[in-house]
Image 1: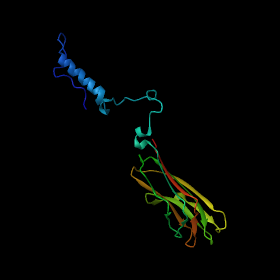
Image 2: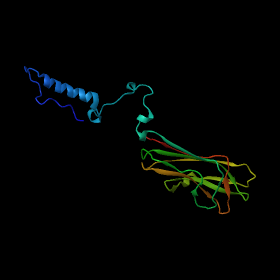
Image 3: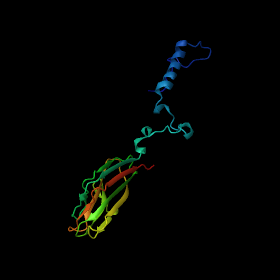
Image 4: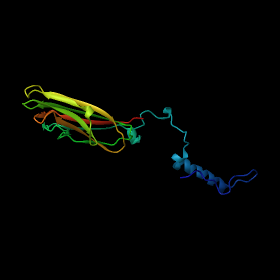
Length: 203
């Protein structure tokens, strides 16, 4: 759509007998624009909708720009998981990775992981962290150590946040490593692992 188009003989002149055809052409053009063709190009740059002009509870998530809406995902697992004895970080098995697409590079990606940990009979310990798009976050380390499996389970609860840095899809994973190759341990059966990610839009 364009701007309103006048009749071919415009403008009307003083003392001119106004033509019904010309008047109808001009009025019809205005009606067409107002009724069906108002778009971004026909709204002044400085125009805005003030708060008082919005009816209460009418601005729904569906009407908001996708980049302005927080994005969340949760993955759970209740089966027993035998943890790695490797001393380098690996993905925790049995828990689904979460992929998120930030709306802005300034968005904050927040991540949480919790589970119940039990070491093997020989004792030992593990460290838990996250991987963001292939990069392991050494800052998020959580040490879990238990002398033997007769002791109460240890509840692991770690969380961390990073700036998105880009608007491309990013895969988030919880990871674990053993303190030594002799360390054994499990994530206890029947007690859910819970892994969640939240992307918070930042203005």
